[in-house]
Length: 367
Image (cartoon, rainbow, N blue to C red; front, side, top):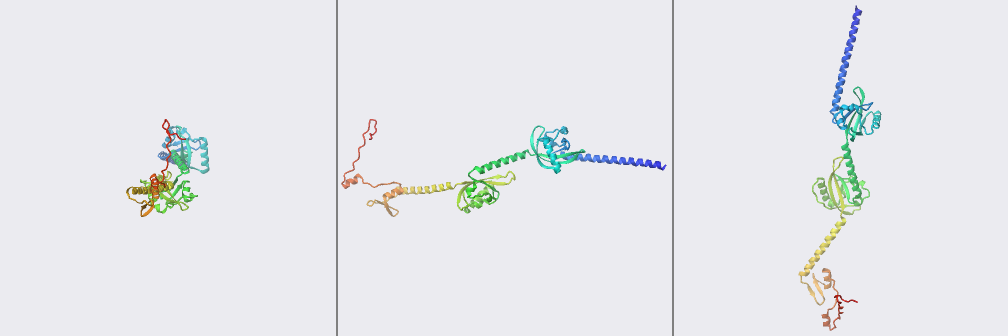
């Protein structure tokens, strides 16, 4: 009898163990299902494209809404699609080799072709995981087309600036906001009398300005940095040999496209020859003004003339009339004697040659 009850107890224990195992398995399956659902909800709500693919076949197991929009992928048909790498299987083999070697892929630039034919670059990261009970890969990727376009624009701007630096005869200098030199064109070397421009980078640009003109240059830089209206004011720079040049600076504020920091672009034009010409012109104008004043004096003043010595009194000094006329009026006078003078001296008058007869046309006949 006891043995019979022992068998019944054993059966009950086995049944109870099975019930507990089934309950535990169901709880575990429910927890796994809830975890997968929470994971799927988390992936679905991510602000970037996320996709889960089979590690064995490369086909999609899951793609969130952003991945579907980016790849033109129908969520209902995603399990029949593979990741659309540009080079298809070759790109997949390269990525799988990198995963085997490194265990994960972070911030790798890839080329994808959406299912509507659009080709675009992405920046992606891939890690191995398990999804729905099978080995999988979880990839997060972001379309960087706009970043690539901005990069191309930056490169184009750099190329144009480099061309200007190499061809424009004027000196071009790029300054930090504090006035230190960031970049200088090769044309600045002869302007400053330097052979090595690289060693001058980082120096304050005001160190090259003549000390007397530094307040003007400092005020000009302040106005450029503040994007304020400004006049073009020339000032002098000191060359390596101690000589000075007059330059006409023009400045504009620019923004570094990479860092977003404000910069100052200066174009320096050598106007030394023009300045010297202007000074000479001013000196000639002063001389002309003095001559005009002297002519006015001649017109209005009464000069004392000595008829005996043919001299005039100018500012208390007696000078020959011909010297006076040559100096102040530019008139050159040669000495001679008139017919009246010859008559007074009793000398015969000078004979003048008769005019040549005219022909029928009225033109003189010349030998």
